[in-house]
Every structure is written in C-alpha cells, then in structure tokens.
Image (cartoon, rainbow, N blue to C red; front, side):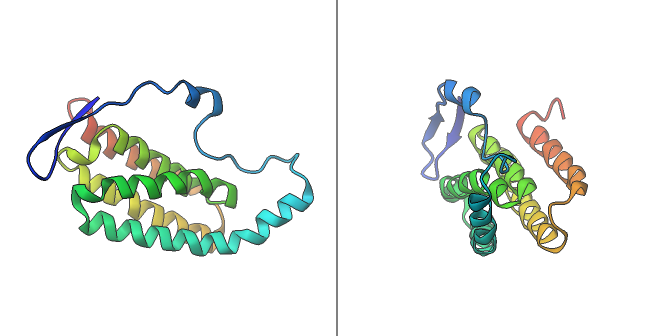
Length: 164
C-alpha cells in the first residue's frame, strides 16, 4: 500500500492486493522459444519492423508524458509501459522490455509520488529510448547491463533512501 497526495490536496491510498497469478505465469512476454513453428517465427519476424515503428511512437509519447505530464500522467505512463513490457521481448527488444517492467514496478510501488520520483520515471524513459536506438543499430546488446544496474540503484534510492 502506498500513500499519495492528489493534485487537489486530498490524500489517496493505492492498495495492491496480492496477485497469485503473477507467480504462475511470470512477468512479461518471453522471447520466442526454439519450438515455435517456422511459419509463425517468419510472421513475427515480418512484423518486427512495424513493431519497431510502433515502439518509437510509444517511446515518444512516454517522453512527452514524463517531461510534462506530472502526476496526472502516471496512469497513462503505466499503461504504455505495461504494453511495452508485454510486447518488446517478442520482437527482439528484451532490454527495453526489462526497463518497462522496472518502470511498472516503480509506479506500482508509489515511486512517482516520492522525492525525485519524477526524475526516475524520466530516467526509465530515456533508458528505453537509448536501448531501443542501440538495438536498432546493433541488435539486442549484452552491454546494457550497466545501464539496467544504474537504473535499479536509482529506483532503490527513491523507494528506500535509507538503504540506497
């Protein structure tokens, strides 16, 4: 449970009941397993360019919301990040999907309402933009881990400043 203050000054509590389904189905979409039939694999591959353009549009929208939307935009940011989390890995943008997953978890933990929470939302978005550009240029890069580790430290610092 996390407490927030709405723009009109009222105190709001966000309650998140336990989700027993997450442990059974996992988080996000996996990459295609090797057992996928070749015709389906070809269809996903053919759709990858269209998804890449769609992802660019989503990241552009996230960037605009993160820089100018304030707390009112958090629900829309979550919705877009949740879509990216579920789709990106299927089309070869695994690190972008992992970053979107981190952003969703940060929002669910009430991070945007905390001191420097907005900066961490923006950091997630800019990390996704950077990882998407790197993926377009070189494919899914193994060198993304330092970026993801730094993002995790920023999240910990905002959510638990005493332990960061």
